[in-house]
Image 1 (spheres, one colour):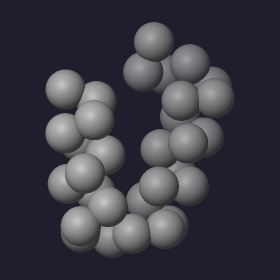
Image 2 (cartoon, one colour):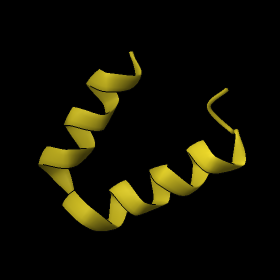
Image 3 (tube, helix red, strand yellow):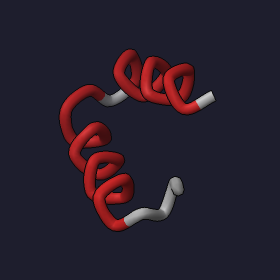
Length: 31
């Protein structure tokens, strides 16, 4: 699930979205 979402975002908005997701992961929102 998570990987699929990362792929969609990678195709859509590239780096900025990845940074936002990385922050959410670090904050533990996805855990």
